[in-house]
Amino acid sequence: MTKLKILMIAVLTVFILSCNNENKMEKPKAIDTENMDLTVKPQDDFYEYADGGWMKSNPVPSDKSRYGAFDELMDENQKQLKDIVDDLLKTEANDEITKKIATFYKTGMDSAAIQKTGIEVLNDEFKSINDIK
Image (cartoon, rainbow, N blue to C red; front, side, top):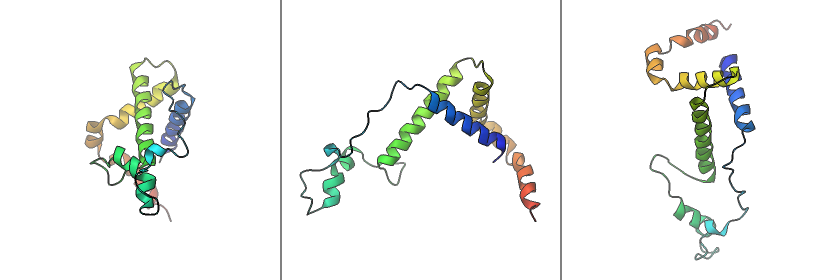
C-alpha cells in the first residue's frame, strides 16, 4: 500500500471521528433481556435461553453465513461511513483534505476505469517485490 493511500485512509478516519454525528446510538445494555428467550429454562438449553430473542429478531441475512452483534455493528459503521462520504461529495470542497477524500472515494468507485486500467497500476509495486533480494 502506498504512503498516499495510507495517508488518505488515516485522514478519512480522523475526519469521520471528528464529525459531530447527531444520530448517536444509545449506549447498549450489558445484558438485555429482549435478546434472551425467557420461555426456555437455562438448564435445558442455555444457548437458546441466552440468545433466543436475538436470533428470532435478527435472522441471518441471505447474503451472509453468520450474523451477530459485531456484524450488525460493522454494517451500521459501514452505513454511517458511506453517509458521511456521500454528504461530503454533495458539498463543494473548499479545503485540500476534503478534495483528496472526495477524489480518493470517486476513484475507488469508478469501476469502469478500474476495469479498463486493469492491474497495470500495480506494475511498479510488482517490480519492487521482484527486486527484493
